[in-house]
Image 1 (cartoon, rainbow, N blue to C red):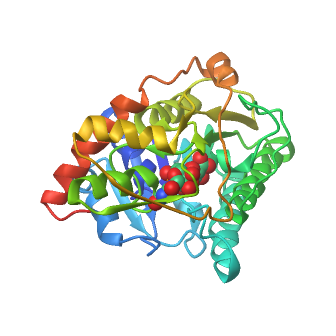
Image 2 (image 1 turned 45 degrees about the horizontal axis):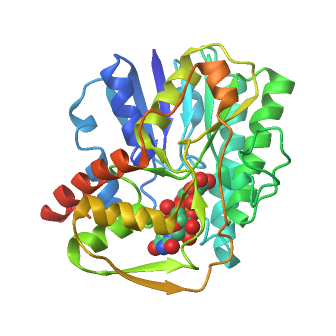
Length: 319
Ligand code: UGA
């Protein structure tokens, strides 16, 4: 099987690419190495893949590149690329979000229409499409109502996937990721920041009172959901939650970090940030039924893995 992984140098894209290579796939990875965070970290993510003859890196902006030759022999597109960051998507930055999240997805879908060997187009959607949901655990049938401009762009792109499936039979599946964490998590995200501060004695800034709740999801569970979405039969245009299965507050996370690291944390509480929702919590039953998927890693176990990674990375100056 041959995959095109967009955003292949990122947190999810690089981990997914490694898993596909380990399973015998050929992978073409596209990445623009944008500067939302240090491109050197993305190069580091690709360190193992770069040595593998079944992995090819195309360093390009998806809006600029000619997709036709890239997709000629592709069986599965894993569309992980995008402009991330819930809290940064306001103001003039919004243009980057519409371009990277909506326009790029539309361009890929147009190319996918004419792609002769395509069997599946897996789109990395987001729990941010829900905003503060009407009920918990939130099922896919509830009306999405994003709270951030970022969430609006992820939802728009998800709708594009569904309507290309309905109108043109593009075999799309959208996976709504709930706050992904684990080794290689982006440096702007909570767990990497908190663990880095634990390691260096730095100060942790909490947005609000720390009682906000997330359905944190471990990276290997996200990768497993992608592989299943690519290889198991699903209805074209399907949309599924992929969530860790536990609702944990940020304050509870801090306690767990103190237990794992055996260090006391310096924590400061600040104002809430526009765009942040109070709670996420997904209903996993659709993906359990369609893909026989369920989360395997608890927050405590996943945080311990991420702690090992943070410590190893900091000794080599990598984060
Ligand atoms: C994450 C990703 O960043 C988004 O790209 C993704 O789409 C989203 O998950 C999702 O699930 O849809 P977020 O939940 O904000 O967004 O993830 P974190 O950055 O790990 O933040 C988790 C919580 O910790 C948030 O409530 C945030 O306000 C809080 N936080 C984060 C802090 O209190 N301090 C920090 O320094 C960072």
